[in-house]
Length: 175
Length: 421
Image (spheres, each protein chain N blue to C red):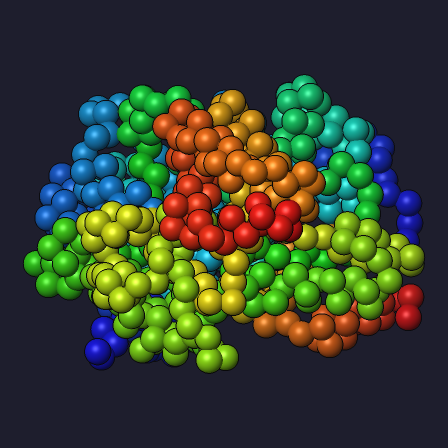
């Protein structure tokens, strides 16, 4: 892993085409609408939304970094501090809980030797509880948030979830 | 009772229905072409009004009537698709978008034609990342094949559709919060009026409709309002995708005529309650409606917009969560309150502070520190203090499992008061 590039402007240089395509979706006088897609872009580039990353997004859109920063606290899929390479976000809301999601989450954490909200010692996986993901009929389930986006894993058992964590370790070369 | 014809979940009957060629081979986009080339926008609004279609996002407001509120002669106008499906227990829009995407997109185009809008945004919850990418590819394909873009079917009607991803906020399912979010702001509800039909996205007249609502449009325009009214009940025409979850043998989506009784859904389709347990309670609209005691009368109640209020609840988004007799309703209220406290947007005081105090009291009862007598009554009083005072429905929803739980399952709450656990 190379250190994240937090030079101001790196985002604009690297993703010029993507940024233009995002801006083109909204009226020219409504560029602020592009702030959420740009925050995703920045988060995937840097791993989390540092003050420098917020400033960069703000500069592209002509907003203040406070305007941009307030969104990070409001929306749960944006993160203002680093965590594991991969966030394993388990739904423990009512429908999933009725199908054993709370016990599932506890067992997964026990097997990983961490508590909910913590990151594994190798810095790879952060396990978090989240609210309903619209996967209630396939509980227990979790979503994986990483640098490629967000992906669902449904109809899980503790065994299948642990097999997935092994897969993550292999992918990131730390088995 | 035999399963009805699938109108919305057609992919369950036809393989590869998420491929454009398959959709076209089964009459896809014929309704749009016929409508755009031979009908006027007011014609379409009248047909949708006549069909009796009601909004499937939860409120059940007549769709054609909602469209007719658009401020005349103000342009540009926008269509915004509410695909922020986040109500606990609701996973119907996701199935439509994943497996029957072209029917939704044709519905969006029909709505845009009726509203005389040339830009539509699909606001997808951020968690639907992969789904949104697929939807974006389908839109590009439609553009390439001449079903989207400029001057469609040789007429003056032009349309572009864009997918916009949210980032994890239940409140953005509320339509004015969704518009704020789409404008790049915090997803907090606006004071209404003005409603979005007058001042919506960027201050322009805007139609906001749910995914399932829009997916109903191609069959309605293809087969007519009378056909549509032949399904369902007089006040709730059509089918509904019921999301069934919780303590049930076969959870999943079931498309059934509105007016189908709970018993048919839960026992005939869902296979009943597993493990030899009995059904104790039903949450008919996710976390956002009063909890029903699963009496014989309730089980025989038709699931439609007019019947649920008569037994003391609401149809909402029709996400039916089944609770068996091993479950403590106090715990259910704890779970839903934790959800609402987490999801409160913080804009209005009754919801922001009220959900905090409801959760605080519930946790105190749960932990037994200290378990004074009268805690349940205090909880009920806090809930009543929130009622009717919130800026948007979310705050009102937050109290429903608590107040109905205490009224209808008092013993479950009293047990915690007595034992302090």
